[in-house]
Image 1 (cartoon, helix red, strand yellow):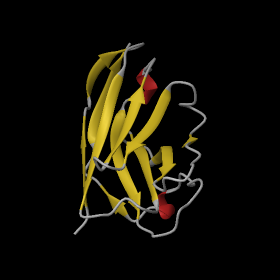
Image 2 (cartoon, rainbow, N blue to C red):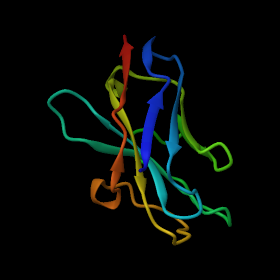
Image 3 (cartoon, rainbow, N blue to C red):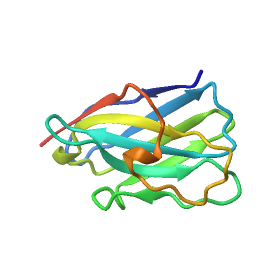
Length: 130
């Protein structure tokens, strides 16, 4: 059974940084996509970043609101996907969830939409104060 477990959330002041990590178990990282989403209270879940799992070249994707501030990376050997978040803003406050699209296909890029992912973690809270 596939499990995703997020860690690294916390509280920071605006301008600060956090690094989130997602540990994947029960899944062989040879294809498909990994993504990070976030959901603030009273708002819809939105895609933040995604990265193909295949090892033969890849194009990460980012939401416009985080481009230049967030970086997604993966370590297939460790089974982890990280999200480095710099220059955090109060509007980045949300529950951050890790997501997986299970597939044997080596995608070059992954669309950051909810329906493109089929497995989800429980989330880790990020709070940014002004």
